[in-house]
Amino acid sequence: MITDYELAKEKMVEVLVRRGIGDQKVLTAMSNVPRHLFVSDDMQELAYADRPLPIGMQQTISQPYIVALMTEMLELNESMKVLEIGTGSGYQTAVLAELCNSVYTVELFPELLESATALLRKLGYRGISAKIADGTGGWSEYMPYDAIIVCAGAPNIPKPLFEQLAEGGRLIIPVGDNVSQLLKIVSRRGDEFSEKQLLRCQFVPLRGEHGW
Image (cartoon, rainbow, N blue to C red):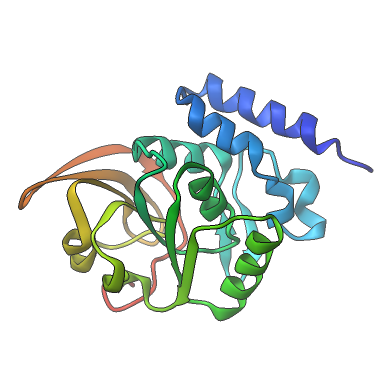
């Protein structure tokens, strides 16, 4: 079976709109990124379905709606500097790079980061810096960040991420247990941090010193 990926992508975006994603920049970014290239060959026919898919190492590529929602909630523009915790397949990284000129991404598994960065380079993305590390410690060298996105479920919000968030910045992270989490958006004003709960979700565990 040969999949018409452009048609599948259009249908994906239609689903996102029906589910309430209204930021046209985010929808355009989702339209631009070839999601099927970020999954294995045997998963490509399912790439644009609104569901997570396995990518190896017991990790997943998040469902399109969650990617779009988390991206939309960060209220990004091209001048912002963004930190991503959990590169995974590189799909969320690509969506961020469509919207921002500076993306910093941290991945725990070398195999995933190697394949993700190779694909991102092949697709022509620029302005992405990546490293292998415990993402729960963030990436202090380039702090502060206008936005931080955590693509794995944490027991609590890692303290280093609060410290690395810029004034007026926004942090989005799933917080809960190993079964399910609440997606939270955190905003910083001076030394004050306000939290808002968005929805219940299910992510793979965030591994590291300040995670599981």
